[in-house]
Image (cartoon, rainbow, N blue to C red; front, side, top):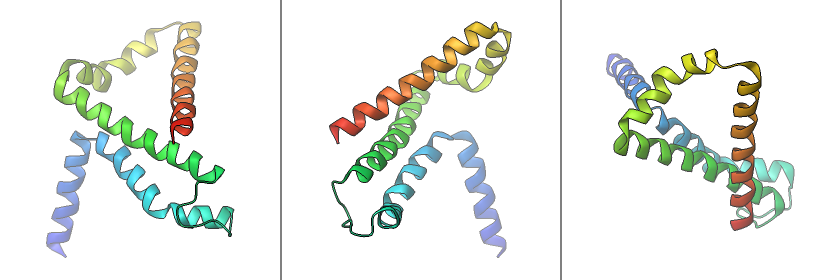
Length: 123
């Protein structure tokens, strides 16, 4: 039991440093458990069916995985920008005026929405 607690503690410290891995883990878990969700929505669906629900689910999974991969690449290739996003961006965001916050937030939301729609079309 002591080894398990130290393993969990080490794993938690590792995840705090490489938070990007959490989005990849979410994507993998969604992939592994997608058949349960799909059969709950549509009992007649196959394990991997090209139905409408699975396309949306695959787009979400791809978005999670690509988010993790992009953040890992940022951390490895451009560590300065990754450090800015982790440490300083929140402080800078608080200094923006409300219209700037709204513009930035809606831009990010619609960028993610657009990426999900494009991924769904590709899949």
